[in-house]
Every structure is written in C-alpha cells, then in structure tokens.
Length: 245
Ligand code: PGA
Image (cartoon, rainbow, N blue to C red; front, side):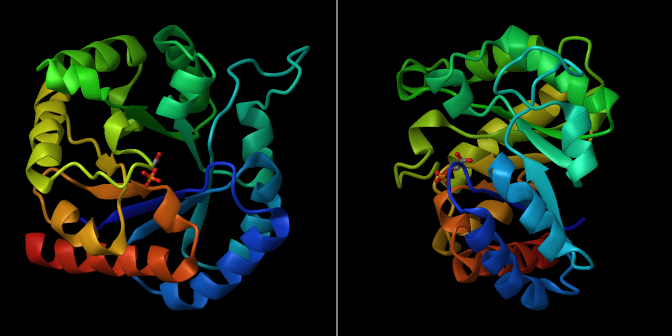
C-alpha cells in the first residue's frame, strides 16, 4: 500500500511552465514510495511527458471523448492520449459536469472507452452543498456510482470522492466526513478499488485525510500548481501510509 497523489492542473500551466514544474519536482520525487500523477491541460501533456521520462512521475489527461476519431471538433480520443504517453484520465470531474453539462450517460461512455484502450480512469463523484444539507449525500453517491459504472469493470477504475462544496473553496471535508463517504463507497462497490479524496487538499490537511483507513490518496487542484506544495502533500501521504501499515 502506498499513497496515490494526483495533481489536477485544470486550465493552468503552459507547456513551458509545466516542463519547469517537472524539472523541479522530479529529482525530489525520485525513489519515493508513492504513485505520483500529474494531469496537465492537453497542450501541456507532451512537454510534461517528455520531462518526466525516467522519473517516477506519471501523466494523465483531464478528459477524453469516447469515439475513436472523426468529425468531433475540439475533442481528443483515447488513442491520441495513449500515443502521446498518457496513462491515466480524469472522467466526470464536477467542473465538466457543471460547466460543460456532462451527464452520467456521457461519463459512462467515456469510462468504457478509456478502459477499452487500457487507460486508467479516475472517476470523480460528489455531492452539492444542498444535497449534503438535505441529508442526501449517500443517495447522490450511490446514484452516480450506479449510472457511471453501469457495465464497467470496476476493478479498472480509481474513484475520486470530491464534494463539490469543497472544490476550490478552501472548505475541506473534515477527515471524518471524508472517511464516512469513502467507507460507504468501498462497501457499496464491495471491491478493493482505490478511492481518492479531492477538494481543497493542501499540505496542512493532507496527512489527516490520508491517515484515514479508506482514503487511499488525494486529487489536488490549487495546491498542486507549485512544486513545493505538491511535494509537501506527497510527503504527508508517505507519513500517513507509514502509520497505516
Ligand atoms: P482543489 O480542486 O484542490 O483546488 O479544491 C480539486 C479538484 O477539483 O480536483
């Protein structure tokens, strides 16, 4: 068991600044017993893959389209991602769902496409604040898991629990709140799949989150943009996992 620490750069870092980030972090990350994955914007992927070669930093994409190729202006396929050296892909991030209108049906198609090409998908799920306040968190989680994972081999999927009210807001779910949902997901899926927590993770709270029994790692947005804070989160994960063993 080792921590899985992922950086979702969202629409940040150019090919030039992304390369610089990897240059700074890869010597420090060398030999660390952690899965470290960076998810740059599409255009930044090639320079990050290039700079990360020979290091223990893996690269993912933030999205894909499920068709192989064709007249789909603005979209990128699994085959293209593989060709450029991508291993992971985020699917169903709440920003894709809420800003770009992605439905659970589309997310299900994307998951199937990713898996059929051998990409490792990170499926994001999570509740809105109103849903939590109405006591409907677990219903929402169950609904998303049921629909997004319909006819999908769950053993090939990494789940990221990201309460929407905690993303980019500075409000992190407490370790207990996160653990409650993680253990629900783990029981619901009845399988040994990885479950990451995401939503305002920073160096100061990463240890307390990752030390929880059902939190296998973190998906970090804002705090993954600077090498030193991302690195501190990796170290917090290593410390937490050492204690969990
Ligand atoms: P945040 O984003 O860490 O900036 O809250 C997390 C995410 O959206 O994956």
